[in-house]
Image 1 (cartoon, rainbow, N blue to C red):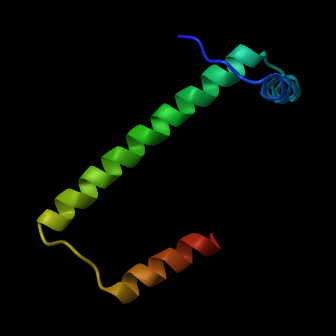
Image 2: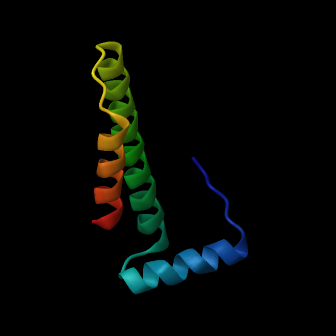
Length: 74
């Protein structure tokens, strides 16, 4: 697989890689692997949420608001 970046993007990636003490290829590979892992976790969480909803497992709006507030304040 080949991915093409603009010269400006390549310069940015090179600078980030240099600061991270790695090469640009490793930086991009690591970033893509993290993206794939995050996507898999997100999709699993959505599937679990749908399954809970199908089972009628809901929480009240006030509880959801409190959870979101706690997340934002963490």
